Image (cartoon, rainbow over all chains, first blue to last red; front, side):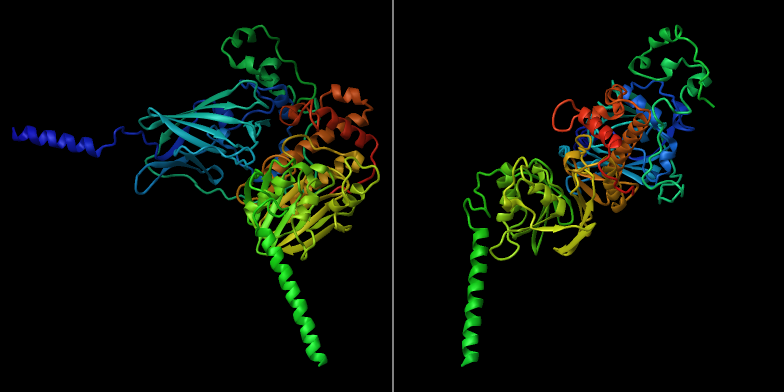
Length: 290
Length: 330
């Protein structure tokens, strides 16, 4: 009898002490696993490889015009990968929580990214997004909410950078919806990226991360521009005129990918496109190729 | 006796001045629909604190910058004439100090339309309106016979400059005014608040459309690029090419160097493409058919409104084919 009373009291105490709903925590340091899309994420994509991207014609022209020398311009040198791209690139990050000291309500989840020393704040306190005339940032402005054990994040006010690291741009009109899903020590990240300028349909990507037992790697990434090319006019912007890129057709020929498929587009992102692929001609040797 | 008379006269002048100052002070704080203090029914515009002493006013036709401090208020551009009461009402939500300076970034009425009313609501000297600074070419254009829409003489710049730059020190910071020849127009000024670390670009930089190369008012694509490159030279990002110096565009959202960089790159790339087409002898119709702006059209392009894609292409084409002058390349 005495034991039963004690047991009931203990259970009651535990029930009172515990929150009504034990919320998932993402706190800790996470490192990526690159098994998915590895060639795109680590060595980086080939020039002219737009496969699997729902590009607009404008995005394709922008990418074909992109000359990697543009990154040598001093104002481009310290540009970072923006929020929608960076979790697909080389990175590790740390999640921490900001809570009201008195109420312990969750105000924000902070995500510190070691690549380029970026810090992102995911506001969890229900605040609204800034007005349209507010500045944009690399990470954008994010608000989050828990949907069961899934953290869902909506982001606006993102800076222009790129969708793929070979000149395929994103625009500042981009918005994203992300889902962070934890399974034990594995964290899956799914992003749905909408861009009315350069994507004809939302781009969906996913990555996996593993919780680290020990902190590791370099968490600092200071950047200072230098003059890399001295005899270039101050106002020059390296770019290829339409149809004049020396790399045009190079990727398709080298990997035997039909030219049409290499150019991407919404159709190429669907499984049934594999049927069409078989009917497409082999890529010709590019005239201007290496 | 002579000394006594002198003392009385001095006292009388001092008294009159003190009365005038008091009257002026009372008028700026008096309730009701005076020029200084519009009635409560006037809805203020949206504002955004950009940095230091500088705020941006949104919705007056063009963006307006307001620098406010102990010495008073400095306003860069004044919006459309019909929005002047709202501009003044909004300034009064930021400061009740006198509006002492107005700077016009260029001649267009969405930037100068409120000059008369805003100047009258202010005072550079006791009883006088606010001073209006602009490049000499703004006054020339504004006072030209037959100008449409006509501007009242009270809206004219009262303090023009001709050299490359002008500066004043106001509210504890240097305010640098740089002339950008043959850019959006021939009278563009870029205003740099050095301590607040804010640049006001006028229409040399906008986020809502392609640049308006106003050739009728002396604009050119190379001058436009020079202006954008000047902004890049002045701006210093805080960390990893983000923040730091902030830029108020003529229209659109607050930006930093990275945003201006993308815009500068775009205008340069389109200029390069069209220069190649002009060199190859393409007609304007052939150039339009080649879609030299395709990669930016979904962002900046438009078939309607003040700045259309076709209008931009025509302006760049005509400028490259028949330049009106030769702005030096920065």
